[in-house]
Image (tube, helix red, strand yellow):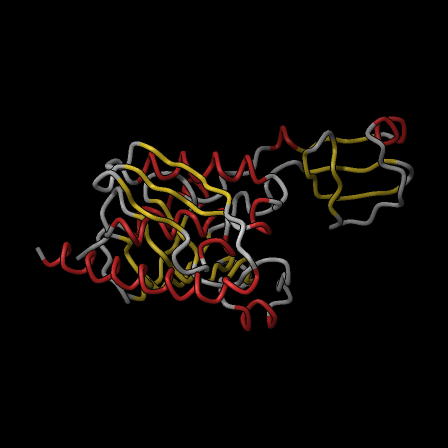
Length: 259
């Protein structure tokens, strides 16, 4: 079983700049801490990649096709298939007046990042009330090296649904039995408990989940969400039932795969 051009794949990776060896991104928490790029608000864990959907840079995506589960490899990505070449037209000199118009009032230091009309820019030089701002992506023009570990290829309907939901709503996907398949697998019903339905931007999250399922699980024609309210003393029993249902579904999925 190899990665194809339409697969959903979980990978671990560490990305470095070839010229300097600087680590700019990684899914490993300890590596992130050592490189001083650890972000507590983000989960450092295997990341989901949809081949052909530009969820990662083109060079890394292309290198995944044809790989096997558990395979480890290294790939070199040129700027043209990474974050692009540097564009001199995206480096602009901002006068004091222009900086104030952009609501930039603090003293600027080379290397710092500012936001101009929602666009990030790196300060290249600053002094005398003026600053040279670089709107190129920080990794533009860089050759990148990725160390990659293919963790899982999502082939079954169950694997795809859980991966897609986790991408947008991690806590929901971690709850056993959070969905049911009905109408011979053509409809999916996703349960939301009281806390989940109060999640910020939950309507946008639900729409995103539905769109992802329609795209990557074509046999499903309907995605429905149901709000669940459970009496506290019945929660434990409900969880046991959900776990049992999930186990049966997993067994059925396994039989389907073997067939």
